[in-house]
Image (cartoon, rainbow, N blue to C red; front, side, top):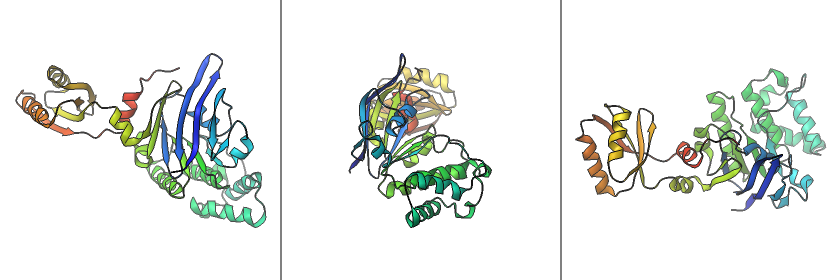
Length: 311
């Protein structure tokens, strides 16, 4: 696939704080990359650099082959940036809002009318186009911001917390819109704290903490790198504490941690050894009620690759 967003070793300082430290990753056309990390990890600063709203101290970003440092004006023509919040203009309708931004992008006459209609149709805002922005729900405002972001048909879309504050139905609808955009061949970089949402959309992820990339690549590849064997979930009537003590006494068990009402752990042995471990637990008198393989998800990846430290 063709690389549309190439982040090349960017660094950004704010005084003594190094907010972004040699960050590199790539997003191809048709790819949805989830950009995850704890608060203060450097996600928004990285996205602002990619969107030409900040200049890196060192490094560069190529947007569809155009440098954001050498030719930011041309790079902006290829970027659609949807911030985590934006101003609602008083006494401004959806039509007027989109018309203003279409003119700002240099669109004129029939071309301007056509792109506004396409954006409204794609985001299903047709029945609301005469309504004032400040009267819209959070979900409709997010749709409007997405419609504005699409006006100039960008190759790269950068979405900062697009699902924040949305109800479950609005999140599902937004997810389908994002998938449709990827299907059109757009490269999408999307940050969110709602890991379950990212898991439903993303083909690749980049994990960042304290300004540094902790892992990047296909979701399955990164997930495989955080386990040293099979991941197992187990639950017993005796409770978590007693079960944990027993597990820690057994060979080839590692990374035991609480999850839901039970424990998850990595098992380093083969299938025969796993069978023996199951028989051992069943005979231990702990009242084993659940023992099953567990797929590694984005929450596991996030917890394994980050430490929760703030800068």
